[in-house]
Image (cartoon, rainbow, N blue to C red; front, side, top):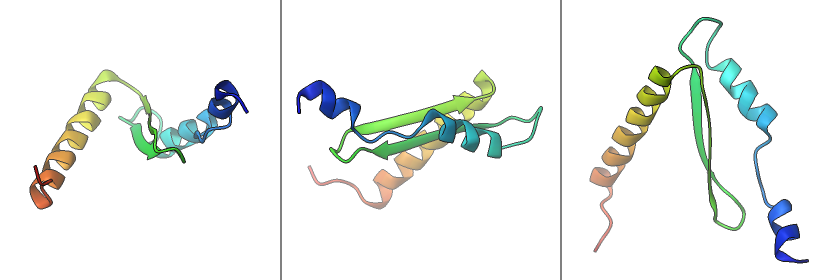
Length: 79
């Protein structure tokens, strides 16, 4: 198997599933969106996102930043 074939067979979440999660995150005319971070079977980080507007995107990004910062404080990495 060559490298291109390996990349084609690598894990990914179908866009239909991302769309469905987006639809489940809120009703019509609501602020809705989704950001997912997953790891492929080869350890490659993958990020999927879909938003209804820029305000929702910024709010979710800020929430993730706050979450990741709090995780650093709970279990700091040793340097």
